[in-house]
Length: 196
Length: 81
Image 1 (cartoon, chains in turn green, orange):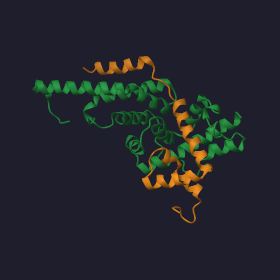
Image 2 (cartoon, helix red, strand yellow):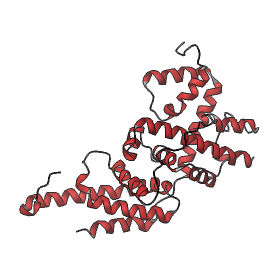
Image 3 (cartoon, chains in turn green, orange):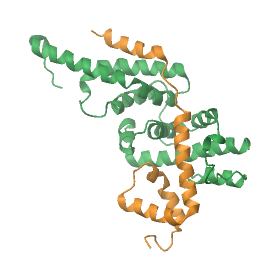
Image 4 (cartoon, helix red, strand yellow):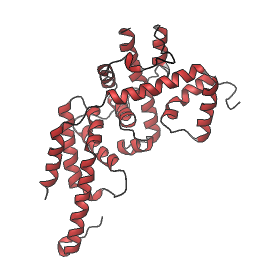
């Protein structure tokens, strides 16, 4: 968008108003999807609601910086994740990179060792884990890893989109995702085996 | 074989698990994973389990937006005019 002054031209003023209304409607249509991600980036519903309101207030003010035709949901979440960090969460510049013993098959293997092998015809995870177990396990994942897990696994963003939203290299997305999922599975394994 | 002499095929398959389910593998890597999965029930069971786990995590963490929040967001819009 250029720096024109639509006040001088009624036609431009009308075009601008139309573009703005369209932007606002599209952004509001995405609110449910944005909220689902926001809710898992923070601890409480109240925090998620505040963050949503701050995000939408900023988005409505900055609507001209959105490029029509690009991914609006990712654009909104970029604002939201930046605000979330600004709200007091320090970015972990050097998150814990100690190697994890747990591999990608860890949860399955733990269940198998505990004598609860998920058999071919009975492999439903929800028979072993409650919704609360999953929410608690996700909360236990450190922020920097959780952000990526939430964007990719709950928000269904690609690695490239997650990299853009968080303003980190795609290789960092992949390594944090990998580690975040392993931590999540370690937490879930503890819950699942305890409840065996 | 597509695998290097020193790499256990199941280790390699485990390494491809996450990007495979994320649909982020190249065609060649995807074919490599699928070739191994076709003949290895050990990895196949774990891939299937992981796929179910992903779905479950997604469903379990969904919390619908409070009904009045959308109205509050819409009011942020109108107040700017």
